[in-house]
Image (tube, rainbow, N blue to C red):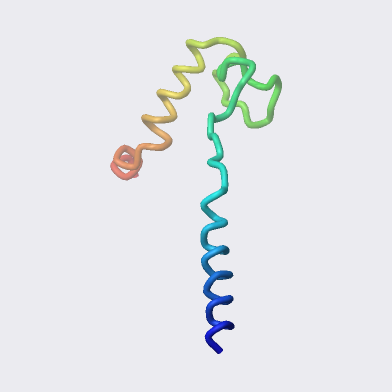
Length: 79
């Protein structure tokens, strides 16, 4: 009985310690070859008023989206 408990204890400790040997995963983020404002070409989801490759219009669309589309305070007051 004591020998069985010793073996089970050793197996349990070996199982627990085996998780310590896992190597950490590196998260470096998404790599993009092109600038975010370059777009993907013609798309049905493209916002009107945004020109592909134009950084200024891309920033303007992001500002408008943040102000009117995703700001709950302005959305509630406008209804």
